[in-house]
Picture 1: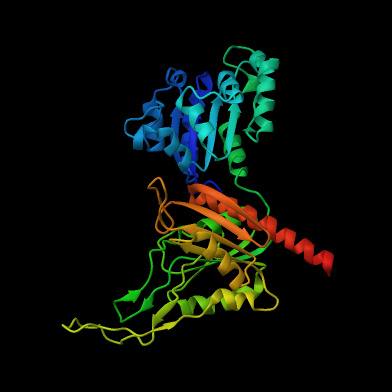
Picture 2 (picture 1 turned 120 degrees about the vertical axis):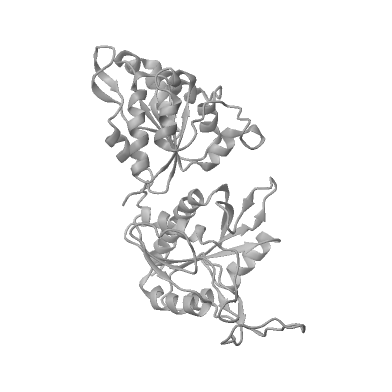
Length: 411
């Protein structure tokens, strides 16, 4: 599975002769389907011109900490939220030292501190610099903090010496970066996910629907697949691209989604209901387009099928995760739904705008989740839905495995 397809990658480039390899790395990341934004230190621009990376990535190159074109001039925050991963290649001894010290004196080191995305370095330096105790201590500090180090390799160096300190070859870096998105926490587990809205017809041209884009559900499908799961995605109308190696079933109405779920759910150990299924539909849809009249129009509605309650009431039942999109009383409403529908877990999100006027929830790339389960809860802070999806899948996997172990112990 190509885990880099669709990923947002920040490629940090520091000052060093190995910066010439970063041009090929940018091209290979782009070929793998990643969206690449390059951040260069001033030292890096002395080795390769920023225009090279702009041409290869298709995006402007970032070099300055204070960006007048960014919202509120805070470019590092925008980039930090945007990233699925940060890769520093090459990572100089100076850069590694600054990261170990927590310094933030340029754009690259500042966004590294401001981002919750996985961070990886690809060290590249003279063999003596690499072997220096200070460099090794700094690298150990970074690894203890969960920062990855890819390489270095051993061989001929630009200085004319031979030894350890060469930057890894591009293919090796691509493989290592891809591995960051493969967790295996749901290896060989069958996972059923619903996504998107449902459209309930009023007549042949009109329907009752909602603003769901399906992004969260599709991101969950991709994250579950990267975690090793066998994934079936049942989607309402959505323009999102089907993740690689995910079986997709398209539906339109709540009734069609209900039927599809009931046909598939018995074969799955985990069910994640991320779709925004309509609660009501017109009791009778007109066979012809309704014409506008001077008089008011009333449409009689009826309840749609309750997919979650049916699944949790089945035997045997899967581990069931629900979603609650709310505009108010987020915690109260989510906990009520968790108990009322007998869910194992619920992910609650506020739709609209957050306190910083950031669009979240429906039809946005960003979201924030408050996840509840019996006896616990966890807040997943504002981030891109792809990032949130990986965090939520890890949480689901932990609770699923915990429940399964408890069932074995009490059997």
